[in-house]
Image 1 (tube, rainbow, N blue to C red):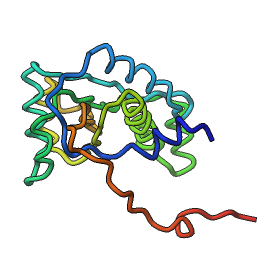
Image 2 (image 1 turned 90 degrees about the vertical axis):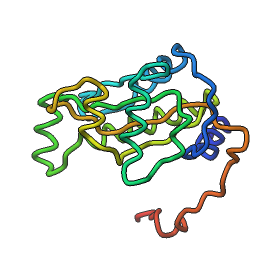
Image 3 (image 1 turned 180 degrees about the vertical axis):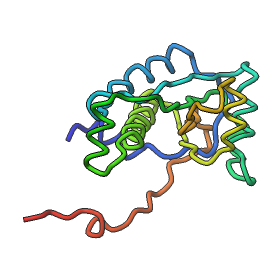
Image 4 (image 1 turned 45 degrees about the vertical axis):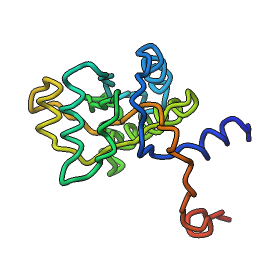
Length: 181
């Protein structure tokens, strides 16, 4: 395996301490463009990515929505978010998922989110996926109506200098990988 991809994957972690250094909009757009090459069921691409950066008044509102029940206090320094909205995919994907008994859209969005985080890591940026947030507050902050579906908020920024790489605590590979014969 290529050492570069090995390094990117092994060094990626959920950043819990962001610096207040702004990220260039062009860099975030490039990350999003590259990430949108992610595979999706029947190429449905059931997503829309919204880049939100300071000084936008949306940033503190998104931060507040993501700090539900006292969680995610580390987001106070975040300057940039990528808000992942679920859109309607295509009928081929929906019907294929229906007949297979599997909703493929959340899987597609998960693949997209992983691509965003790895692309950001390759650019020297930290990320943290936030799935627990106040839905109505996010919709209001984004100026969306109640029928829109925000599925994930990804904090993106430069890690603070003291945000060191933590040991990865994972299950033993024997518990998670099976080579079938």
